[in-house]
Image 1 (tube, one colour):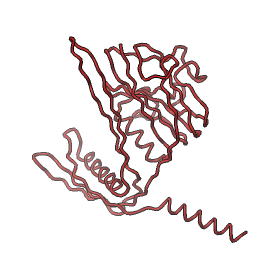
Image 2 (cartoon, rainbow, N blue to C red):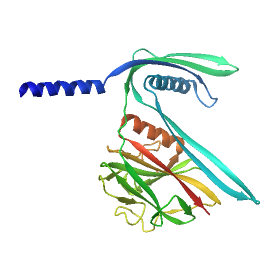
Image 3 (tube, one colour):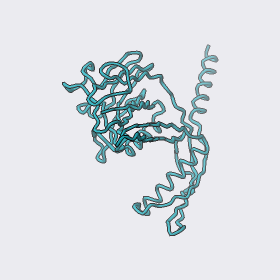
Image 4 (tube, rainbow, N blue to C red):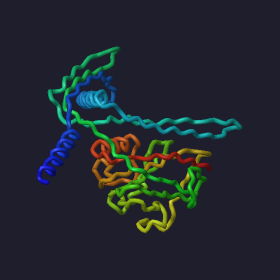
Length: 280
């Protein structure tokens, strides 16, 4: 029995070492510096991009894309607006440099170009996906089509226990609204249990702090918003302001940076996106 336990222990330790294995990867990029960026900021951006390229070359990338189409009438003519949102995520993390990054500054066509070369230890990061059932509800019924002032809520059921946050991105002005956690929760993601249906953003939710139901509004003939549900098996916190405190809305670029950082350091973090259409 002791020999058997020792053998199992060796196998588990070998599996752990394999999962934690790091490799050396190198990458280089040419970065065209915009006029609004300082030299120090540009050098750091070039180094960061070179590191991301090294990780991508070693382990590959994950690309997700959401497309939206809005139709509207003006002066008897029908026009359409097409928007595409994509995210490119590397399948690993940068552990440390094995040598000092090399940065050189050049000029091409009167534009400053920074060439960065890096080498370092990287580790593959495999994602742990959980089956989520996310349903947008219009007046209590599942739908992605809304009219101005329709009641909106979200139904969620997860195959595993974890933590969840809900956002809505206004695809007209690229602003992301934090819908849940609610304002009185200090930005802590909401805990959910496995295989239990939850209703958020409505009075059916016992933690919903408002007397009135959530509604979707628009001043346009038609517009698109994107429902974003972020789930993780680990606790996480919404800290999106410059001072680190919870805020009710944020620019999409800043939100994407936060979400990317969460995914990098938490292999169980995932996001579901559903496009909502709102008509006047």
